[in-house]
Length: 349
Image (tube, rainbow, N blue to C red; front, side, top):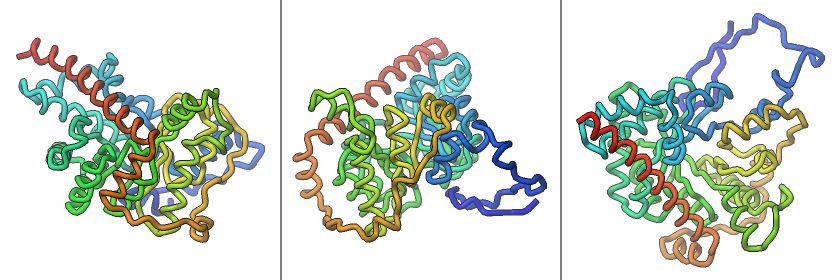
């Protein structure tokens, strides 16, 4: 056995790798080994599971995992996770807010036992325009993780990329609480996040494509012309051009072609259904994004202030509409989950 360092892990912990067995030759390799598109993609990009389903995460062995209120709601109503919900209710002792926080942390804790890297846990979307409220909620979540022995180095606090959310992340990052700014639909949001030192951003692909399909009355786009793919590509190139350390993690995919068109992006968070499609496919995966090439691109620098941010968002109808829609959607799923939890609280207390 020899020891190597897994540089993709935020913890940089040594990992034991067996060298006792010779590598398989090409004739021995199958789709289930290294030739499927998930394994090929992992040669260019860190693959992240976009789900709250612990069993699905186990299946695909991702580096990280992301959750959101919608995904937690879907997992919470599954029979196999009833005990997690019941334990959170017992912990909260009738306090709905405390129970909801514990539920998010409980799912995150289970996921942290499976993935070696980051687990993203989202702040209540109803705090998206409340900087202090977001900061306080993030601190509470990290404290809960600490209570069960999960280091804050393993957790990304997920926050909607409003101006207020970005300012909350600025303070949290100063405190050593790493953040994932989500619902990114514009370069303005991305630049604002990078300039305050956010650890990671989640620019959405599929939702951007959805908006443009409807606006243009088309059925779809070629992968390289997909507006969502083009948006993430532009963000990635801007970051690499100007040396920002913020991780770009493409999210919200509608098909595997969008994913493959972003091979080379820092991270891609992918649903179990699309991970399965990639696992079942064996066509060659080529790197599309390249930091070394971005450095030499002619990309103008933007000085991001609050007024610039708000004006750029105002001028981008898609970004404004999809950000608001995303916040409303996450808030609605929180309410649905709260209704389930309220019923369990009433039955127990």
